[in-house]
Length: 207
Image: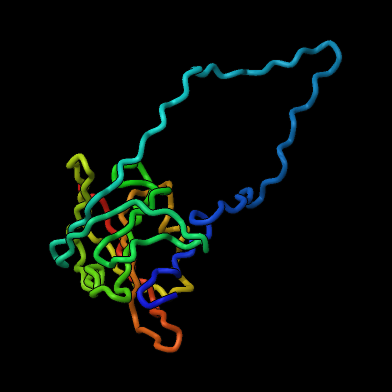
């Protein structure tokens, strides 16, 4: 990984192919009901469901993220997955990437993930370099192209060694809604050309 790249964001579950989902602990194969004996009929309660499927909600891509407390006002573009299985990011550290295969800020649940390089060759230091200094409850605003916005308050700022980044939890598609901002941080190792850590901000939606 070149300096500033966020290559440690290897998404075990979401960024390459979905891994097989194991059955919950203590469960085995389904047990079929006993067959009816002679002279008996089998009664089965069949639920009545509508024949029209629920409409699929279209994603609403964020186009900008602003954090006044850190001097961050950045363009956001949708990104996918690189051929190596890493999260794709814009080369310019002044532009952030929204992981488009996950929730957006207006999804009913799950985490919206936005990431950016801290720096890169031929570019100045990026705004996400200031994430490490964010105070608790600092406001983060994400906006869409139609002008709608979602506001969050910073809950935690955490340094994770690259090999210990909890990708499955950070990129969760279900459960509590949150905004997750990720960049590189920690010491820069000249011998490997890598930063030691990832800086992760988790922010909760404002009421």
